[in-house]
Length: 73
Image (cartoon, rainbow, N blue to C red; front, side):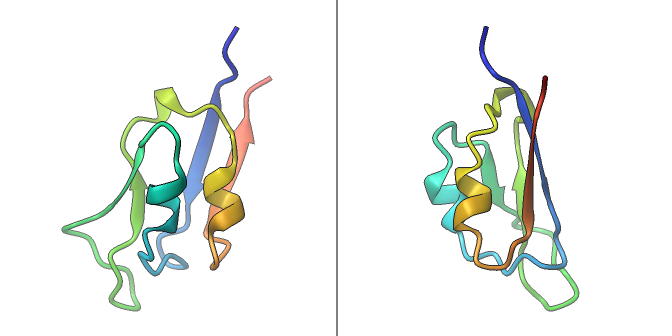
């Protein structure tokens, strides 16, 4: 059975650096084109949480510690 996961992105901490987008093996993260956070950055967002496998590569590479990964039991 495939491992399922869930990630949350704190939009206020995210500076839209694109590192999580580049490293995600399932390509389910993108940078928002129409949202801004309080610092004026376009934050990352999850496009298809159902494809997340909780690999945590996005959280490991995030320089702002804006991503939390949860693995479903």
